Length: 229
Image 1 (cartoon, rainbow, N blue to C red):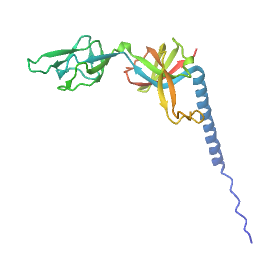
Image 2 (image 1 turned 45 degrees about the horizontal axis):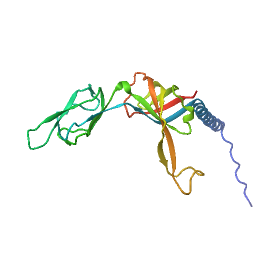
Image 3 (image 1 turned 30 degrees about the horizontal axis):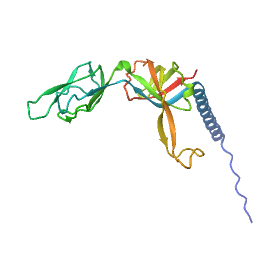
Image 4 (image 1 turned 90 degrees about the vertical axis):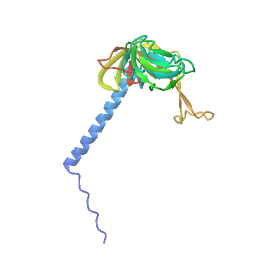
């Protein structure tokens, strides 16, 4: 004699309510994400392929020899024409020292020198940046560059200062592009004769109008939202 399968028990009311609550929360989160994405793409050209940049001040070796009296380090400020070290020339005659001078005023960002090391004439010993010349370099996909215009307002989110409002304006749109090879392109876009696709990016310079008190240093990663016009 066949036995009847036990009847399934209905979900308790609390379980049904919890299931409905979770479903509603998932829906609201998806709607919020979709709405945010729609608003961002409608009103902004956004990219996280951007960094704090600046005009470099390169301190180079005036001659070949041994570095002595090196007096600067990363984060230190230097003045124009300041002597930051000396190069002791090598040879059979009297040992002559040549001063190493900073060609401009700024803050040392890269220090590649070890006291007592040998360097060749023209070698880059350190790199400084003028804080007054700091700006943002954003790389915009060529498919979006038509929406970017000189003078457009820019909202900047700095990874190191996520709660600080930083703003700027588009000052320069470079006329050439930078290429980036993308392997395994999306389906339908692959060229059988050339399996790699080249992504094209246009460098855009953003002049800062407000840093919100944050100390922006070259190399910091940022996300930019360029207002469409």
